[in-house]
Structure formats: C-alpha cells, structure tokens
Length: 275
Image (cartoon, rainbow, N blue to C red; front, side, top):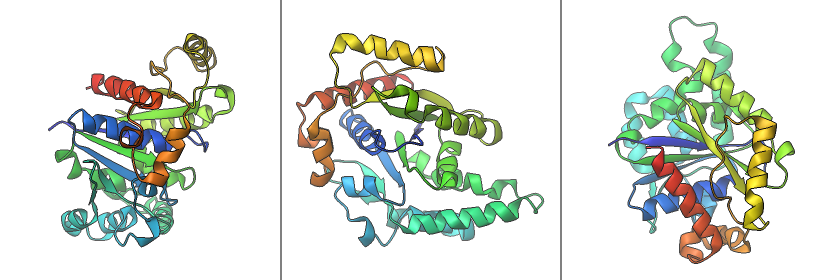
C-alpha cells in the first residue's frame, strides 16, 4: 500500500485548518480510501470535531511521541491502543493539552542533541517520522492537523509528510501568514525533508461569486509567485461548516448537499490526482 502523508498548516488562526483536515479526510474516505487523521494541536480541536472530548482521552498523540522517544520497541502496542475508530470510517489519533508537555520534551531533546554525536536518528525533529513508519503500511492517506504554537510539533509533522496544504482566507491573502509558513517549510526541506512538496494553497471561507475566483488566484500568483499551485475550487463559506464540529460530524454527514461539501470533494479529487 502506498501512503501519502499531508500536513495542513498555517501560522495564522481562523483559516480553516481543522475543518479542512476533517472534511478532506472524510471526502477521501467516501471515495474508498483508508484515512488516518492526526490531531497535532494541544487544543484538540480536531478531536472535538469528531465527537470526542479531548480532556477525557487517556491515550493521545502525546503518549505516542513519548513512547517513540523512550520506548520505541513498545510503539506498536501503544499504537493499537491509541488509534480511535469512528462510525464514518475515519481513524483518529487524538490530542489534548498533554501534547504541550510532549512539545516541551522535544525542546529538551533539541537543547541536548546538538551536544551529542551520532544520534541523528533520534533528532527531536524526526520523532513523528518514526511514529508514522508503521502507520504508513495501514492507510492510503494520513492527514495531520497542525496547531499555531509549539513550532517543533509542526516541524515534526512537516518532516514526516510528503505534502503540505496551506489554507488561507480568500479575501485576506497578503496578511494570512503565508510568508511565515513558507519560511518554515523551506527550512524543513533543507534540514530534514527534501522530498516535502507544497501541494497547494487552499482558499477558504470564500464568499464571492464564482467568476471572481480567478482574480483571487491571480493575486496569489502576483504576491507569492506562479510556482505555487492554488487548488481549483475555493472552500465556500457556509455556516454549516461552522456547525459541523458541534455535531461531531464532517460536512458530508451533517449537510451532504451543502456547497462546501462540493468544494471539499473537489479538493479530494485534486489530492487523489497527486498519487
């Protein structure tokens, strides 16, 4: 089985990262693909959006990261106990505030590793990479929802990913954190993961008429260069997307005929085309 790992990331909040991770995963699942979602944010928004209470999760990504660091031989057992299975077919590695403690442990590793010799495989930036190796054999797609803080967690996700998707609000392109996230991505490409590709910029919360879409895409090209792909169809703004997390459902379960469902279906088609 060939697995593709995607990180959904932007240094700015309120751009639809979690909604995009959830609904892209759901769209791929509907198309018959096996999908694992990973909540890489101590706030646990993706965990909550799938109907789980973050604070009640006894086994989370934080546990797995610490096991990968301290007891890698036990990782398989902990993976079996941590992955949650949902009624929609999506699997989830949940997160809660304990992930911030794991991030602090990574920072301690970062401070000490540069004084060590011959421990490249145990680099703090590559812990998630080792964590995902056994999971790659079980899924077609792994989608990681990255948070805003704890940069080492995002670096870990990018170092373990094949692609990243950058969601931005369609009407505020110049101030949507793209330069910051591009700088981080380039740093990861140089230092840890030269194979990492930017799958594209995903325009979200789109409220204009369809014919204006091309001008929005053109402005992305003007500001950030033609080298960045912009996904064909922006994610339409809909109150239904905002309501989904409270219901613990994706847009395909909550409002399958909504225009946002069509948008995420289009995104999934482009992701599938990447191979």
